Length: 138
Image (tube, rainbow, N blue to C red; front, side):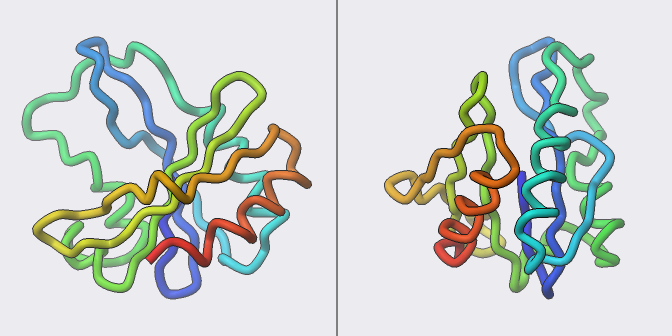
């Protein structure tokens, strides 16, 4: 997942638990938003950090804790203010970037599925795809 807030991109790997649901992983990487090539390289590394079959978290687990700490805000609701998001999914050599709409505290982020962009796993092509999809997130 790629979040952009106040000129900083926050990237977190998503891992699937033993029960089959997805959670944000750690660490939370940060980089200035305008550096598309470096952002593409970091996104590829983050996608590679995704793990299948992680243990189910304790019920008090806060999946946004690393993200909230990295952004220096008190909670995920505060993080949502002014934040855009892009879902990044790797399937073999193809990466799909889906911009999301920030629907606020009540609904969170909603997929803008009709505006997805695909790329191969090269940093150059992914960088170009990010240039297209970043402005679509709202």
